Image (cartoon, rainbow, N blue to C red):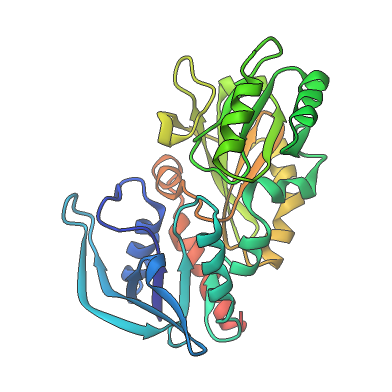
Length: 314
């Protein structure tokens, strides 16, 4: 098969943590031909979806982890799989790439399905399952956010389309910074904010569960640093081995069929205590940590699912 990776620049990645690198490594081991390009090199040109990039070879050698062939422009309708793997922010640039990749429907399998990536961003898809989530409010209006805090007290406030723990604040009932944070966020963009009732169990970790075609394959626990609310690896969270609880299985059973139906092959969900807080479909991570902790061949399971989809016609 011919595989194209739409991703951020490959040079700076951490080969011991990056999930896209692990997916490319497994694809290469299966004998697939790899092509790499960055999102700014994607184009819709007179009806053809093209990408300007390079053939790619990867190797697990720090500082020498990739080799690129000569620059070339290819028609993405001629490849078997396109991976939508650039990181958020989920801005109009990101959204535009999903519109362009939509044009490949019926010709090339795009993973995850860009139509539903666009319509099911991580902090919004969870709202389809309100019985599984903590009380949540999406609003730009300050009085609405104040009323939500008055009802629930301790809350988390964050950008609706943020990622990696950036801009996540815990606002306690007596905290006088709500108005200042609202002014800061609303001065940056025109998007609403998302507020969620604070879940104290976060001190025990924020569990990342990986689902492949709607089926959970394992989890890692991310422990926040001392004095920190956020447990994201980007801000110093520590990954540790953990299993799936009965509640985790219940959550996965509730959301798995929808993920499979909508072409979300590789998904990472976040669970704090008994609550589902995010469903990450844009560029989820955690493959390598889970493989090290549990010995599960997650990348292999993902490629098996993709091969099965192609064999069945998508």
